[in-house]
Image 1 (cartoon, helix red, strand yellow):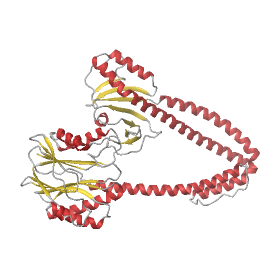
Image 2: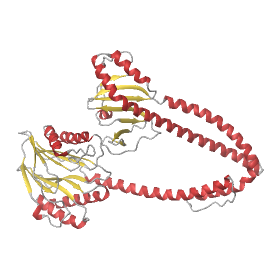
Image 3: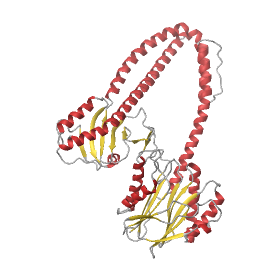
Image 4: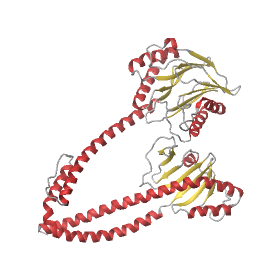
Length: 522
């Protein structure tokens, strides 16, 4: 072990062992990812193709007590895939109607099997959902062009399913009545990976033996260039990407040196790009967090009113906002606003408007509050940034609701006694457009009866699209307002309104934020 050649052979042998081990691990990982991807694609395709069919089989056979025919059809489906080992059916309320793991030979006749918790949320969701090994729940949203998005329960984009993620179960809602539950299997992947490990071990042994022979004969000619490469790698590892390895040979070692030098330059560009991307991502996350903190954490407890509000943003940082401000025990204020555009600029205008309205609420008059807020907003924002807004005021003594519209969407009023929805006054001008809006500000005072509702919203709802031609529109929105406002709680009305427009849009791309506020007289 004292000769250079012997040391080199021993070292190269060790390097070959390490290299083949790492290569084997990477190859296994890559193959595992490929197989996992194939299994994921197979699971998704199988569920897409069979969910509706399984529900039809249930309604045709199992719901009619024809278990034998139903079970035969289910077994035929099992024969078409090796990636699914279990199928279940549940209704919208979470009652298990069929479970292949329990009903292999006869139909279940025991006590009702009820699903609760997060699985019930998935059953009642709009999109198929996948539970992963790390207990994350991913919903797959497909737009009209076939583009697939990974979202959470609230349709916010999340990290997609990776090849390394194993799927525990799949819940595929069909319509508004049933959901099909799938239990995947990774037995095929495990068997193939084990067989591949055995092949790689034998191939590695043979390759290492051949490498030892090669190192013995050619060690002298490659020792010096390898030392240079080693020195270059150390410098590269220290962050000096401008260092070059000078090797003048024209063989593979020389080519390796050229590749090494190119890699250093590529790494430098990649590090710069990654640093920039990380900085921008952090800034967007911070902006989104700040905007989220602006929204109220809970609904106000106001005598005579039941209030609920919510936002479905179309981007990481949206342009919609709402808030509630308490002046004293008798006077309460609230508003819904919509800034032009999305992203960080819109988020900044939202923050400024929120602070201004809160600071001027001491004036007590909603008209004066908007006039003063507009005066400052015009000075502090650019000419092309403005916010439409409706500010309301409620006095617990006279039970009157005062609305002031600053160029916002026309508010809706549901009259419980006649079961109809009417449009209230529109008008005003958006805040931030002109220095003084005093001549344009007008109040509308409404006397609400028990059960009456006032609906404030942003244009993202009536302007939602189902495709390139069909738009949701005010007639559709007024229809669902009339149908929903007889619900007891404002929160239930809010959920019904947002759910209707999302279901109508049929997973089409959401182009604008959707915000709604429900004010119900109790």
